[in-house]
Amino acid sequence: MKKFLLIGFLGVISCNLFAQQRETLTFEQAVEIGLENNFDVKIATNQVLLTENERKIGTSLLMPTLDLNNTRGYRREDTEQAFVSDPENPRIIPGAQTRTNNYSLVGIYGFRADAVVALQRLGKLAEVSELEAKVVIENTVAAIATAYYRLVLEQQRYEVLNTTLELSNERMEIAKAQYEFGRASKRDFLAAQVDYNADLTALVSQEQVIQNSRVTLNELLALGPENDFAVNDTITVKENLFLEDLRDNAFSNNKMFLVTQRMENVAYLQLKELRAQRLPTITLNGSYNDNTLNSAAGFLLSNEQQGINLGATISLNLFSGLSLNRRIQGAKIQINNQRHLIEQFENQLQADLQRTFNTYENSKRLLEIEKNNYEVAVENSDIALDRFRLGIANYLEFRDAQVNRLQAESRLIESLYTIKENEIELMRLSGKIYFPETAD
Image (cartoon, rainbow, N blue to C red):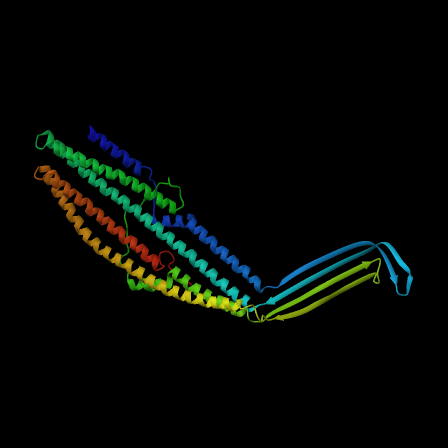
């Protein structure tokens, strides 16, 4: 009775795990959904827009300013005026009114050499922002790939554990029959039940691992944790990857390396911009004025003026308290730092490629070993099961063969996943995980 309860419980587990998985989510679909929904990608895309907007705003440094002004004035006051020709008889005007109306159109254009360089620097920063957004995209694709194939791996482990449970169930049936016919002790039957329950516990625990792996993938896809789907049941790997090709691609396409190079250009432009501040500044200005004055008192009862004013100013900074020199020295130091950062990144990139490639190659060799070992373990398990049915082998020998088969198959799928994991990292380091074209 207990046996049938356990088998029924296992059936409930399997139903809960796979019943609602009606649609299969391919890896390509997962990447597409992730790039559309992932919040890091959205933020990085918006950051590119912000940087591009700042670059466009920077063009205002080379644009003239044009202002249209209109000034109106009104004054009412009691006026007493004494004239030189008749000082004894002043002119008294109560409530004298004065009106003024001034229209002006003023244009100013200032040309500064450092503004031209500043615009170039903003352009480079826009390139950096775009490359950084691509870094986020590549990291997101790598994370989605790792999470997707991790879920595939955990489901394969589930199948391995399920196969182990089936073997344990068959062993328990045999042990029960042998016990009932007096060919084995009750101890053998109870040991079979204990091992069956241990395998069932491992299967239930693996269900939780699968659920959590699916939640992790949903998080990367910006989907709700309750979203359920099926994934492909196999892990495919590339035929061969070559270190030299990966290294060449990395120095041409690794986005973080390109960012480091662009930042060196930005540092050069920053120095050039500071040096340009020592050059003269030319300011051109012009205005059109239309002034009207109407007054009830004073020497002028009315006055109208219309005309154009033009001018130019050349200014040159002679001394700024050595602050510009200090900023120039700081910019030179920053250029040296950027050179060191490029060299450091080159060294780090080569080291990361070498380490990952070593693991990749070693995992491929281990895969071949584990394939052969798995075949041997399966054959040994089948022989042990036949011997156990015939009563030639005891339960310890069968359990040992069963555990060896479980471990061999687990190592086999783990080796395959490790190859895929390192393949993903190698493609990310070489800048080829998502953007196949050569970066500009």
